[in-house]
Image 1 (cartoon, rainbow, N blue to C red):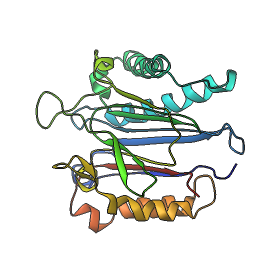
Image 2: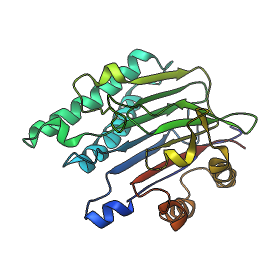
Image 3: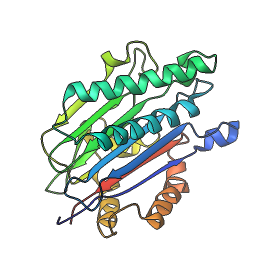
Image 4: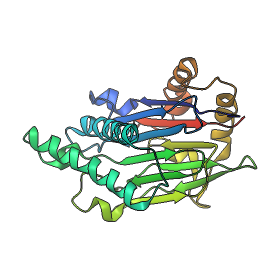
Length: 257
């Protein structure tokens, strides 16, 4: 192989949650399956629990964990073939089902665990993404520009969005399968989407991402802990907090030489 995945992620509590004594309601999970082989596959998830849902911190952590483990379990028993819409919708349905079952086991309604969800599977030949709610997914292009693969979703009202905990979540799912392996990709929650997206042009604010990806490319394959800590510190810095008081999650991955 001529390159391998490097990836980092951080979920940081917002200043408004610290003031109100609310835990961080964002979560993330990521794993590289079959490292050191030509079949290397990146699996990642990001979620943002609804601020109005009492147990949303548990909900966001659950869906990220379930998605990652389900993909890993599936691929440990059978080789990955072409990523299909049916396969990805099945993963989404299984993730939602386990959230509903968790709510039932704890004597609660699924809405108590309301959360957005962004999921990713990428190998050398295909990239599949699924997304419900706000936040966004972007990919790096060959000319050092960035494309938004999945734009934030608005709900019925201007400050609302969609959640995986809704009965008809599958109808609102943004699912895309790219017949190419991406070299750089990022997922993030709405805590930083005003800093990273240009709404008027519906475009990506490249200066936010470019230096991060440049630095990530210089790291060895895997999950560099020092850079991960630096990302957490950046998201919690006054420079960011003065512009957003919400929880924020950013996942970055690169296999670009």
